[in-house]
Image (cartoon, rainbow, N blue to C red):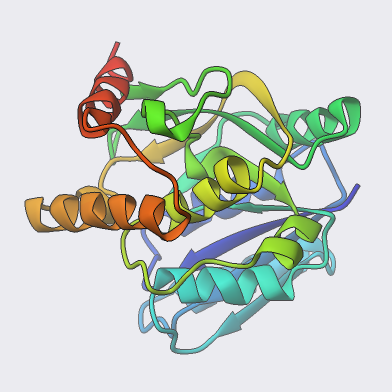
Length: 248
């Protein structure tokens, strides 16, 4: 099976090399790597161009203005030609050389629409320092506060074609909404790969400040309403407990 990995970036010269190399060094060869750049003004484009020959035709990229991170992700998803689609942030990276191979094997062996795994949150400048663990666990209902880590959520292209791309109405929680739409509303099949496959540097958009946290919470509640999924009054508490457990 062919897998497309999409990286969205803008002025990402600081850590982009690490993300690219974690793709380049994968044991699984049938990878299409797509980079969507938002019109960087630093050294990002030079980095992309320097690595392009090493992919021997398996890398595609564009650089143009976009309407935010989820608009850029939608561009990448539309460009992708793989059977499986995944998203890798420009400052994240896969832990081992066989991370993607294990993901693909999860699809093949279990004949599912999606595969999700676990990730480590690490210090920005010391990626050996694990600050927090996201251990997703077996699939549960979203109303219980459960959901996969989006960077470790891989989905067949046909699912995006059937149920749609990121909803640009959501500026902070579009990743939550699309997983809710796929897994909870439309009940796509899934397999949990119980393994840490990725390291994420701390500092995501949804957790930058209190305002974003508040906005993200509001968008999550709106996503449930959009899909006519009723949540109990204690949902926010359950979700907080789920987040707290990740520190253990």
